[in-house]
Image (tube, rainbow, N blue to C red; front, side, top):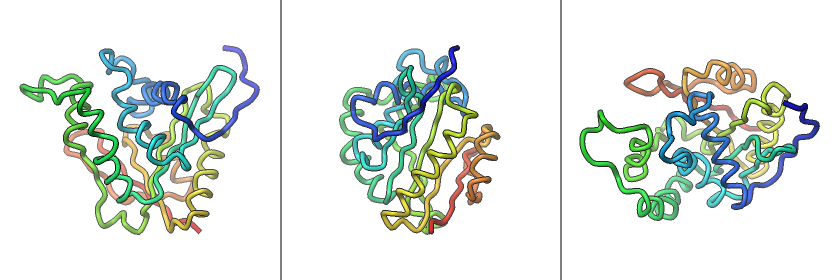
Length: 211
């Protein structure tokens, strides 16, 4: 692959949705490529983890691009409680209308069908332990943008944006299988709050205060 010379971080627009959904898919298996898991609907993950932020929190939605197109994003919600309410009331109804909940034995559902179930029964985790960190964020980069310092710069940028808007702290969720990401967040001052899940890999929630 030719060396990419320039990365640009900018506000996301609805026109970036397809590119950002592709990044979400290519990092959707605990940081690895999840394309093989969702062959019947490659945009299924993006409708949960990307689309709502671009449309409901545009001031805090940013994409990273290079000469080949969108290669990463960092997305945040300033007030998680308000965001989740809008997610249920404004984003999910249209998604639910296009993608009915699966029927039958859940043991036989494909990964895509499990996401369709989540569209209709959103599993939102926002316990008291996270209320001191009311903002939350997501960041993903495809392999060609990794290892170049872009993730650290993007995190510094979004944390600064949240702090400038008066947020006292932020949290994020990640798979415990993604050890590289876990080390990355700890270096940025995040601390583990809890691990959730009855099966492996569990979900790790990390948080940090903002100045």
